[in-house]
Amino acid sequence: MDKKLIIRGLSTISALGTSREEINRLLEDPVPGAVPFGERNDRPVFPLTDKGEALVRVVASEERHSRLDRVAHLAIAAVRRTLDVAGGRHGAIGCVSIGSSRGATIALERTISNFAVDPSKVPTETSPTTTAGNISSWVAQECISRQSRLRDGLSVASIGTSMTCSSAFQSLLTAAAFVRSGMTSAALFGGAESCLTPYTIAHLEALRIYSDGSQRWPCRPCGSVSVSSNTVVLGEGAGTAIVMADDGAEVDGDLALLGLGWAIEETPTATGLSADGRAFERSMRMALESLPSGVLVDTVVAHAPGSIKGDEAELSAITRTMPIGVRVVSTKHLTGHTYGASGMVSLALAQALIEGAPWTGFSYESAVQPDRGASSQVVLINTAGFGGNSVSVIVGPRRPENRVG
Image 1 (cartoon, rainbow, N blue to C red):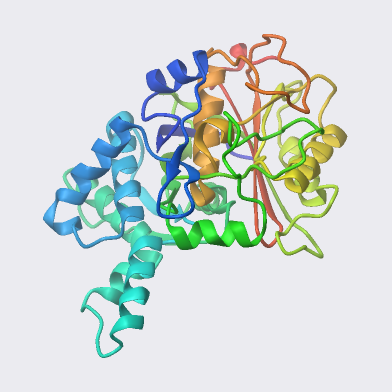
Image 2: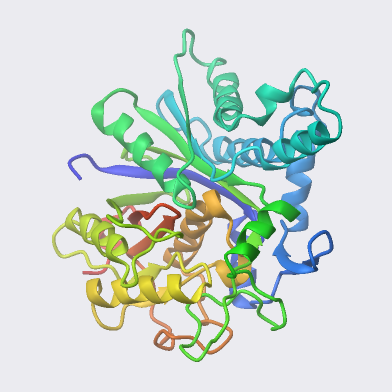
């Protein structure tokens, strides 16, 4: 990458936690956070933590936000924390790019259901509250309200991205392009998903990949080759952060953005992955080409949703692309699959590991090498989604002297 970029103010809300302290505690003592979803065959799902739910309820209680879909509430709660953490130590945010796989899921399903019963009319606010674009627009409003206190005449591009489970990192590609081109000095990116609905779970049941919940760990990414059933579980989540040129300021939690890669399967299957994960391999190799000389990836946060074929394809690509002994980790057994927000949740795990959080390995028999207690300094994160879209991101600590190589 020809311009040194950093990621500042990372904030996520998911079953993994809402703060680095909460995330660290869960990594130290991993426990299954899934609960039965009574509205759909008691399928397991991963709700937010109590602290996360409290943050979302504050947003939902505000009059100007009360009619918005829950996914917008999630995104707004995340961006408020991002702006608090950044504390104004960034340039003018001229681009807001937020991804979501399904957008305003709850509001859209509710209005369609009501219309099926009474097609004579729909509520006035139906169209603006059920479009995916309102997520990015309302996040942009939060940025404008903060920045307008300091600057006049702000111009912000608000961009919504829906590229299935890679949506959050697709939004990062857009944000980074804005900054690298000089179109803005800082851009806010992220992803949000509120997908815990009977209809959305039914989608994955139809694909025969949803977990039956019979195991203590209902979602088992990178599971042992002896696993004979799919274990995908859905979870809610959101996350935002700012990408900008390295300004030399010391802000706690900053990450260096070291590499970006992307690819698409040429002949995708119904779920968008080839059997050997070719798109994963291409996106990882592209990201690796951006690494500074002597810097090596030591950890991979796998997308690994818990499906047999999907996990096998990605692990195959990792084996072909990464050095022997690279650490393979995931969030899915702790958070479920948060769809368009999954990249941000994985980024939070990468940040925690880089800062020294423990990784005790998977809590069940896995197909990856046992963890040997090595530290993580340069982390590659994979995301992929239906349609065969893969994005790989490499991050590390900002100070070169802290990196391995």
